[in-house]
Length: 233
Image (cartoon, rainbow, N blue to C red; front, side, top):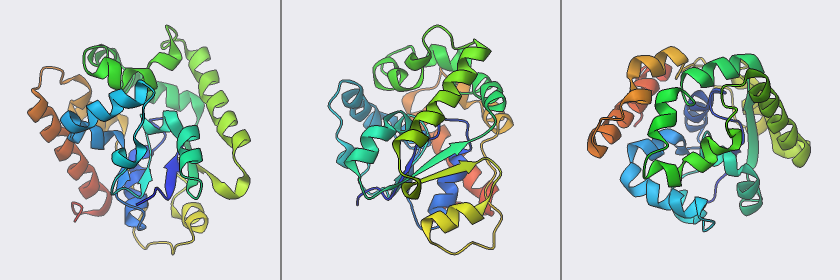
């Protein structure tokens, strides 16, 4: 199965909500960081190959129809070339709000420490943390990085292939872009900073690999239930 949708938006731009929305619209399964954390012992070696310059996209996305979030958003350009028929969605939000959210979650000190340890340092850190260098706490730099990222995506793709999907916009623009009917259910709103902090996923470095994978699967199921009132089939 070739990817039909590629997410180019950085993490904390509503990517888990977008994942659930895409799956609800028939563009699933959708690959998201939660897939890596839920199956880390299998996924991490694949992503070590990616960062080493030897990606096997067909194996990574086997069975998936779409992808959003880190680490795949860091490779949006390569994926857009590899899957030329796929549409691209740039999920976005206010840049200052993004910085506040990402600083509390993905780029928190606890996560920075976790992703600096093997095997995450080789598999995921290059795609998530290294682009920011030592300025990860510099508000002005990070906000400009975010805006520059979006400008680069918009400039690189033809308008008919790209949807800029702002947090809170809901179904209409997304469904028009994907040429599918608008569902009756409300658009998902999950994985807030509060959701992540209460889950403890960003700070459970002491877990065994089995426990960490189980926790990630549990969190994914909880977010699906929060979005649509039931776990995924």
